[in-house]
Image 1 (cartoon, rainbow over the protein chains, first blue to last red):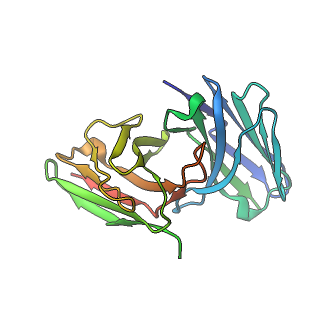
Image 2: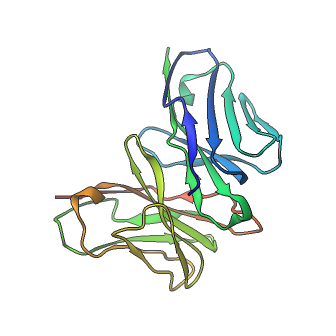
Length: 112
Length: 114
């Protein structure tokens, strides 16, 4: 079945440093979504990427979808303590027939 | 307020005692899904439903049942719970266009099976 690998599992940064998490799928994806989960909370949708090579920005967050639609990244510029949490990517298989497959997430820990 | 609700939020039970976790959404979404979240394993999909009376297995369906008799509700049933089903469970819903859209997650149900 479809697998979505996400790295790193943990990332410690100093406040103000940049952060990037990467996702790779074993198969071509129809789309990829990104979610953030604060400690003790539930996943909250951030964005969806659909087109090959797509780049979207939300303030300090930049999301990319690879040309082959098999990989994606989330980059946060100048992290703040409010960015703490776990970031998940989730891929929908080609043809839309499969359910959504989540990566295992990247835990972002920020040291003031 | 648009939301996904789950009940109960916390449950401690014993092996073999049937239980149901309810999920309800008030957004008229076609797509609903159940996930379990375990440390180091992330979110894994149990079952999903594209619409009423349409359900499909996700990645880890063993030991679970679901039903979708009406659009707003998608209960998760554990006929004979076992300790390896101790986990944090999330229900989610989304509108269904040509591609899966934003998923809205419920607050979670923390289940402990002794």
